Length: 480
Image (cartoon, rainbow, N blue to C red; front, side, top):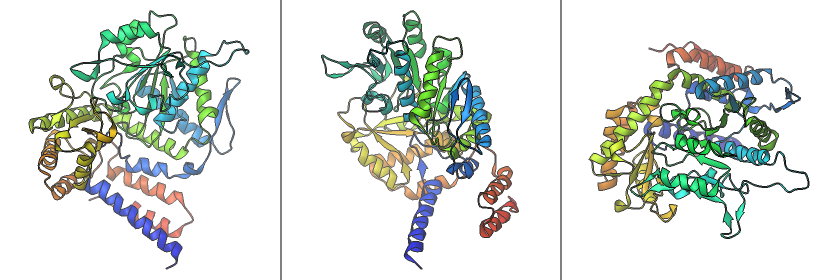
């Protein structure tokens, strides 16, 4: 065997082992992850994965700069319509390849929009002030000056820092906004942008309250909701456009169970006060931030959106029911669960627990991983830093899609409690539990999708005799 072949064999053996461990033996509770369906994965590796389809609007017409793009143009048009249906909105921008990039595109577009009428002799100004969720109170990194907001907000000459202010929180519940103080803050700083959304996400955001206040302001701030973590719960958890938001951004691979991409949605049609902002957002998507916008995952996202629009209500309902059952079960076993007990601890897919009395969050997360339960450690609002975190953050979305229901999460809570409190080894029990949940739900069932999968596999390298034979065998396979 040549060294080249040996390297490939070693890598693929390790890849297969990791696939088996993560997909068959582990229970994944990371709230920012999800496994796409097999048909979505096949779309991701199809021909568009290596192609380009740059395009932009010129003189009212969408111009494509590459040939052989009719198929992917139609895919993008269809995906835009499917997502307009999902959000109930007028505008969809699909070219960002991550939620972080989606936010950056919006921030760039807002700065351009705010400078639309400035004389050429004046320098470009940044956003005067922004309100967002503080990082150590659960705010998302991409909405911070150290993240995608970098260099888009004016500096405060007194503090030497950007004019970014944070949602005030309740003393007895740091996961929920203090709306009385928020109203005072908005009046005092008169922000040009207010960013809702978090990465540690247990409660609804005060979109309707803020919209009611800011609708009377002139000029009023732009209201943006970064729904990266809860995009797949749109409607069941919160529907920002119905509450007055202008823009929704997010990533398509957390609770929304598609490939890893970003999306920008808006209600800024022609004739609205922000229609020119949408034009700027589109131009910052291309050529501002993207060239190739990863067409394989674009194709996969269309199929995933078919799935989401078909199974949205059942999936969303079960995710939230599972999260509340999971939280209650952990709490009943003496694990400190964050959030409001009177409201079921969580309104989303996330469950956050406090584990500091048993060890640092990082150490507990490693202990859980050693027992095939995958989580991530989390700094809680009273922690000094992520390095000495007190919490573990978990999500129910992926295992819900593999069929787990309330009683199954209650069983899982028992294993987790034993691992955390007693350092019990529960790897075998966890593996046996996972063996019950290997079939993906809320998608086309295997008996109906296998012939379609074979057709796609056979088409990827049609001249390869070995692959063609494999696909033919798969096509003829009968599910018993």
